[in-house]
Amino acid sequence: MIIEPASQDHINDIDGAHKPLQEECSPVFDGIESLRRKFFVGPGDDAIFRKWGEIAIELSLNWLKNPEKQKIHADITLPELAKLFSDPQLPEKGQKIEAVFQECQANILDNSVRVNNPRYIGHMGTVVPWFAVVVDILVTSINQNQVKIETALASSFVERQVLAWMHQLIYQCDHDFYKDIIQNESIALGNITSGGTMGNLTALAVAREHALPGTHKNGFFHALRDSGYRDVAILGSQRVHYSIRKSAAILGLGANSVIMIPVDQKNKIRLDLLEEKILELRERKVLILAIVGIAGTTETGNIDPLEEMALIAQKEKIWFHVDAAWGGAILLSKEHKFKLKGIKLADSVVLDGHKLFYLPMSNSLVLFKDPKSLDSWRHNANYIIRKGSVDLGQTSLEGSRRFDVLKLWFSLKMLGKEGYDLLIIKAILLTEQLKRLVDLDEDFERTSDPEICILTYRFVPKSIQDKIKAALTVKDQKYLEEINIRLNDINVELQKRQREYGESFLSRTTLESTQYSQEIVVLRAVLTNLLTRAEYLVEILQEQKKIGNDIIQEL
Image 1 (cartoon, helix red, strand yellow):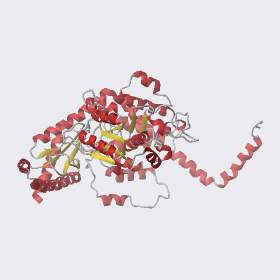
Image 2 (tube, rainbow, N blue to C red; image 1 turned 90 degrees about the horizontal axis):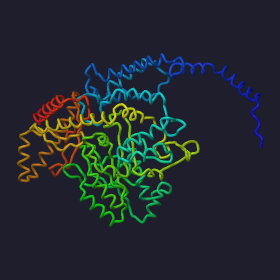
Image 3 (cartoon, rainbow, N blue to C red; image 1 turned 90 degrees about the vertical axis):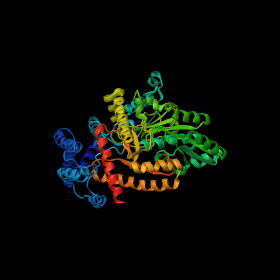
Image 4 (tube, rainbow, N blue to C red; image 1 turned 135 degrees about the vertical axis):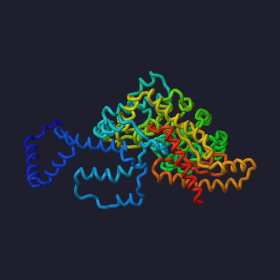
């Protein structure tokens, strides 16, 4: 068949068809052109971009420096804050950018939590290096979509390089291994994900396919029926992150399929109880999809005995997943990486860049020991992620994704292992300083042994501590229960008031793993803010003691 070229007359006819539309709708086209000139950067339009970019940077610097010494949490009630954003009417006409910036500053920036404040030591989000803020501008400017090579050219290869770097950090394969596969489109060492939750979901989805082949195509019901098992389970400690239960629910296993094994007083999984549970589930014909180890629990920062758990998993032929979202970065520390001994035996590992890698929200990875693990999860479409392509979306649970990994790539280039080693040393030294201060103060009781930058303790006046020690000696359980209920109320109120006062901030949680036979409320400090100094820790404890004593006086 001979294909004739398109007629030029026909093309001219098409061109002519547009002319009446332009004449008839010229106000519309004028409006479009006005929007283009105002908001879309192109040749000759850089002056506007520079002007408002500089204004945005000034707003950012002003917020970071906080010259007006605004509180960590603004003096605004939640109902008042909700009222600022309660207009249900979508704006009909665009406003001037000056007005939008002013509203943004007054209603949003001024009412945002100042996580960079040196006395903010309550959660895992913290101060970030200035270059990460600048790189975020680049990420938005180039607007790459990581799902496919057609919208993510160089950035696709950057992702693969970072995955290889992190894989080597964990699994320590030799140089030749990575040289051969780092840019091999048929191999996926892992995925960049939008957060640790998505990383854990991906790992457990692969673990499910590993234990129940065919689930991905035929569904969980058919795969379980054909396996001969009655049910499934995932095992982890009582400190397992809530995203594990959420992932189990999403995967159709049910949140209750996650069985949480008690921990010891160091907040580590009880290996004896883990092995007992495995034996019990085997006898009940329950298939164990995965064992989850934690490299830095969210509540206390403690680390499970990863090597021992890995050996149990290998013996029982169970997938071993390590949630290292919090603690994975300490592998970059010469002095502290030993704490994660055994992590290289894991079948899958999750890391969070927006925690101890000191990156902005959000940046995570999931990695697999076997480069073929993700093969069972490949999916394709006719218009993107085609078979044989280099599209990263083939093995990802997510579709469109930002080029957020540029922030991690840039940070690793800027700081290197040596820089990260120093950051981690600083954070752990801060933790040790607070630990010593708490131990030396007779009005506080430490409730955990810190490993990775988290410390829990509670306010307990010395007079009460003396009575508690006496009660523990004679095993006066009734007194212990009553006094701990009162202390729980005091520490809850203490944490609330300290937050309201706005000079400093710690979070709180409950622990069942202490010397008491009941849950107790504890204050939780996360010591990763590089702006925090020892004298601030002293001031924070002094404020807590004053608040605590005030509460007792009111009782």
